[in-house]
Image 1 (cartoon, one colour):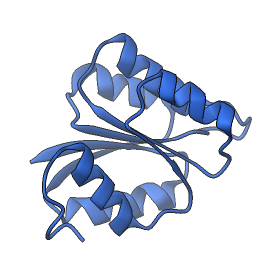
Image 2 (cartoon, rainbow, N blue to C red; image 1 turned 90 degrees about the horizontal axis):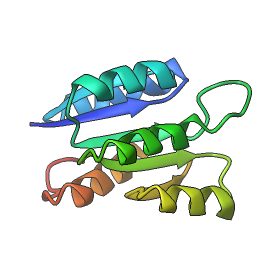
Image 3 (cartoon, one colour; image 1 turned 60 degrees about the horizontal axis):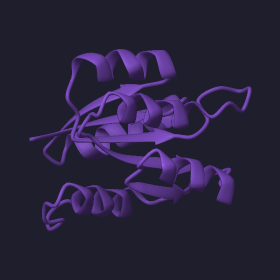
Image 4 (tube, rainbow, N blue to C red; image 1 turned 90 degrees about the vertical axis):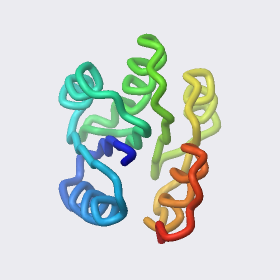
Length: 128
């Protein structure tokens, strides 16, 4: 079973994504902020980490901090950065941090599932 971490500051999104992937043979953990995400990453090996770019009302780019945390510790987790506020600058920063995929919101859960399957090199059949 693959283990994924979903990081987003919106509880409704966390609930929906957790419910969706939880019924598709994933172990799913969620975090609403940078601190919780880092605590989970420090003690659990994840196959995939999906993080939003902004995790606070201040518009900070905590999602990049999560990518940096993973890169600096040379973790093997595949990463996906989601954002509704994308730019070529943010995409370049994410690429420099070895992001697996940079995606613009909104994205359908079925499409996210296919991308995760591709990143983990497992067939996507049956995941949708």
